[in-house]
Image 1: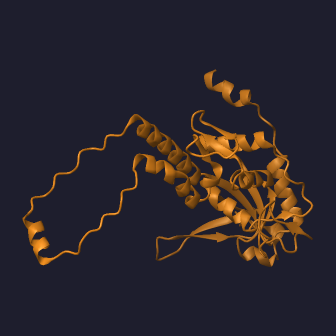
Image 2 (image 1 turned 45 degrees about the vertical axis):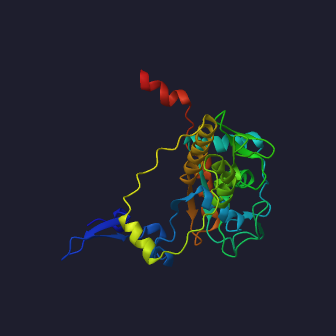
Length: 287
């Protein structure tokens, strides 16, 4: 009979009488006696956040930083490159979190320009620069915007859709998006004057039933200027849609784990393995 040291970590058993497979966790001998091993609470979890949800949560203080962790060091070029990667579908890495900061750090702080920290917020161990960059880029009047003419993200003073930009602040705020586009929509579809419609009467209902159906109106013919505005709006909406679908991967260390484990997770994520060059991966494709 196999010893306990040779047993698999996860054993699949067929539950008799049903066709349902049940996955049972088997304790590792090195952790025997650990009361926490009765659940999966010791394992890191993998997930993701929608870009807009991550930014809004950080602004509410739902992610925190160790008080003495280095500050924000990215510059404007780094922020623009991050936005461009998100727009073009390139991976931007993940964030490493540690559940419930209390008892893990003597002092914590929120992200710059955000609300006070939440009581049970997770610590951000890796990913501060990316999260802070997104907070900065989407802040009101930040100047960061997508330039329609060049298909690039830029930083300019007071970008507007009318001037050919999609301000990054609208990427996380639908109300700002609608306000930004309202003036442009009215250039194509001017607001009509209110028409007073009298209350229906018996005679008017009878007349309406006898009146033949009105043919549909002819297709709207837009002027070249209106067509240009519509093209601008369509591109801007595609940018908004793309960013609404962006997910940022996350790895979360459970609250039950200690600092030694958190340090090891960080080390294995950032400093283990052997680096590969671009040539190592892609030169073999055509060889």
